[in-house]
Amino acid sequence: MDRDGEGRYQQPMPDTESPVMPVSASKPGPVSALDTARAVLTSESRALAQLAEELTQEFDAVVAALLQVPGRVIVSGMGKSGHVAAKIAATFASTGTPAQFVHPGEASHGDLGMITRNDACILISNSGETKELADIIAHTRRFDIPLVAITKKPGSTLAQQSDHLLLLADAPEACSIGMAPTTSTTMTMALGDALAVALMESRGFDQTDFHTFHPGGTLGAQLLTVRAVMHTGTALPVVAPATGMGDTLLEMSAKGFGVVAVTEGDSLSGIITDGDLRRNLKGLLDRQAGDVANPKPRTISADILLVDALGIMNDNRISALFAVDEEGRLEGLVHIHDALRVGVK
Image (tube, rainbow, N blue to C red; front, top):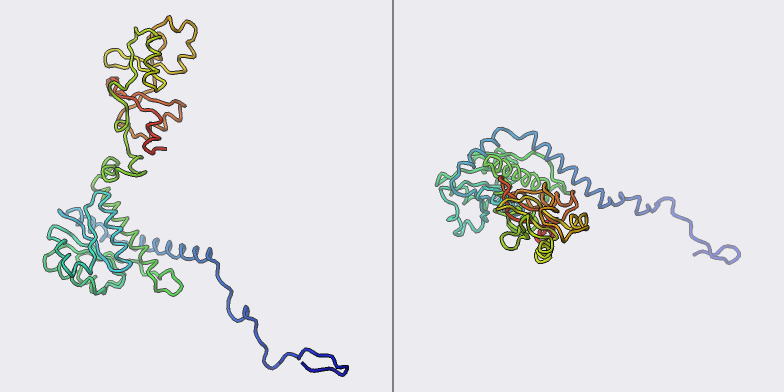
């Protein structure tokens, strides 16, 4: 620093010839993660809308061809396309179209034997020039195996060699450098979902079929029927109309459901609940089950979904339902705890 005339130090004057710009003025400020997320989702949603708009009748031809396959649909791709291919194969398999993922690298070292004349192939490559797919392409041409290409490039090797071509929309990747597989893989996965749904609808694949392939977890629980969990036989609380209420109370207590069925032969003629007992306390033990029973109880079919039975119980504030057949014959009982035990909520 310089001294002034009184010996005090002075701050140097700024160099007006070469001003120093603040860092914040030399480059734009950072974009928030939320802004980035919204931009990515908007970009990919636009691409999906474009894909839907540009989809042609070739999609119908692909579905028709896959429906005729006596074997499996083999799905393959390399890198991120490979991950998408594996997901598409899994979705096919779980919705009624036998399918399998084959890794293109492993295919070149013996796994081509997994692809037979009874199969069809779906090969995924954004560029259509993925070299690792060459051996699978050649294998399908040699043995006349139907080949479906999913690519963005109609003039690519994969597109030219295929029997059916599903073109991806010409939309930019959603990443900031425009290179990471983002939009393209999203479109491919959505197109795979569209194929799976079209195939399952064509096959008449319904909830019962779906449960066959999804017996475990939450999905499996939501597709269980009442018949799968209901109590039957000697576990059922059952009395005849002429049974004294003393013995009826013993039956209710022994079975522990808070309800008892009153039957004539195999047919349900009424039920007695804890509420019925409270409403008939006066002289209760001097009466018979048929006198106390509700003659028009709410019942269900044993073949309805357990989740629907739970809804009926919740709506009517009851804890148990008897299942009867079309002739009114008693088949079983389901309690609210049965639904909760298997994960239905």
